Each structure stands twice: as C-alpha cells, then as structure tokens.
Amino acid sequence: MKPGKFKVNNDGDSLSATITVQPSLALKISLYLLNILLIAVVILFTVGGVGVIVLFILAFEILFIRYSIWHIYGSETITLKKDTLTYQQFYGFIKLSVKTRKINKTLRVIPFHEDFRAGSNAMKLIFESFDESNDPVNLYQTALVVSAQDYEVFMRSFKQLY
Image 1 (cartoon, helix red, strand yellow):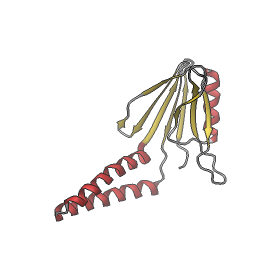
Image 2 (tube, one colour):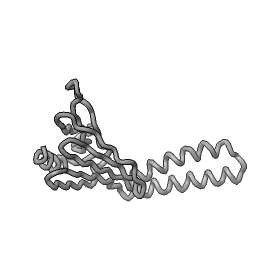
Image 3 (cartoon, one colour):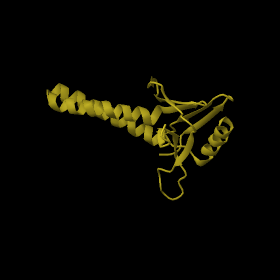
Image 4 (cartoon, rainbow, N blue to C red):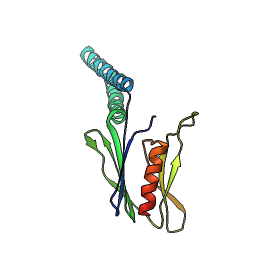
C-alpha cells in the first residue's frame, strides 16, 4: 500500500493528524468493475431463480463494497491531547464512531514498517502508553501507512505537544 495523503494540525493544546487514501486510477477502475460484475452476477442468479448462490454472492459483495469504499475513499483522523488519544475512520460518506483512549503516563509513537520490500519507507504508526502496572499498552495502530517524511513532520509536532 502506498502512503496516504497526510495532514497535521497542531494548535498547542492538541495535535490532529489525518491520513487519506491515495488510490491509483488502475485500482479505482478495477474495484468499480469488480463491484459492477458482482452486482450483475447477483441480478442474473436472482432472475434465474438460484437463491442459495445469490445469498453467498450477496454476502461477499457487501464485504467487497466495504473493502472498495475504504481503498478508494478511506481516511482516518487521530487527535492527541495531553491525556487522551481519539481516532475515527471514514469510509467516504460513512463515519465510524469516535473512539477515545486514556493516556495513563506517557505516550510513545512507534513507526512500524509493514512493507519490507527494498526501498519502501511506508510505515504505520503505533501509539503506545502504559497501564497501572507499567506494562505497555497498544492504544491504536493506524490502518493507513505514511511516508518517512510525513512521520518526521508528525514527530516534530508530537514533541512540541509532549
């Protein structure tokens, strides 16, 4: 997955970062065509009276539409304050619920290189704090990857906040 478009906003009291999917034209066309094909198959089997197969294909199509919407229009926003981490994912026009995690003592941001291909610098961000027993707790891991340059920009703002 290539790095998404990254935007950071630091207002002094909070740090907000938004990562947005940057799909290629080929990916968009492929996902649109596959969805159209699956919908056509559902219609053909429905008209043909093959109900059991329609249920399986329809269930798969619902999952595939969600996958397609995420990979074409997806974005996520992370907001950090001194004692909380809040995040929300967007599937285009569909917003998932806002989730907030308490930061117990400190917060660390760990870059995780998911793609080990030579020359790839795309990474996910892992936000880690500690529980009452001083054991590390993973508060959130970004679903989308960012570039090394965007990570550096984020970390400069992060160090200003903490």
